[in-house]
Length: 143
Image (cartoon, rainbow, N blue to C red; front, side):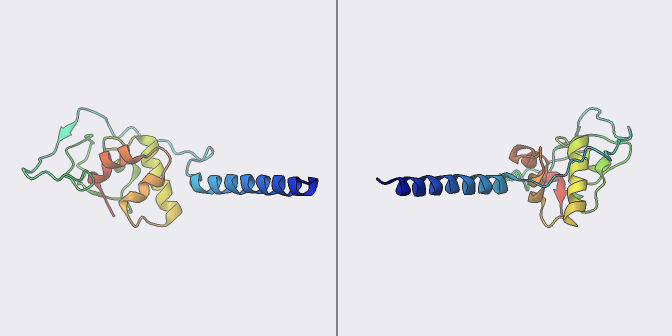
């Protein structure tokens, strides 16, 4: 094999690796919703006291995303479920088991970034909310 053929193959190899790296970066990139400056402090109005049980029906759905919520953190005021992702405040979102302060504020910040949610599944695009968390909280949320 001649030197020019080796150089051509090496150049093609380097180009393919560079393209793969760019595609990998784009595929895994998420919007930056956590800002170091301008972080929001949380008031202590939401308490994480013992879990309250909501009434459940005899007909339980196999789909976790559409099943009725079974528990939520209690607050100083009554919160009605499911919460509308496009209207709920971070304090209201924090009443759901599985959503703490950071995740609740991330959901609100991502809503501001998007303009509005079109589906509940969009919260899985937020860093820190994977499928497990999604299925835990999806019954409490609506759009």
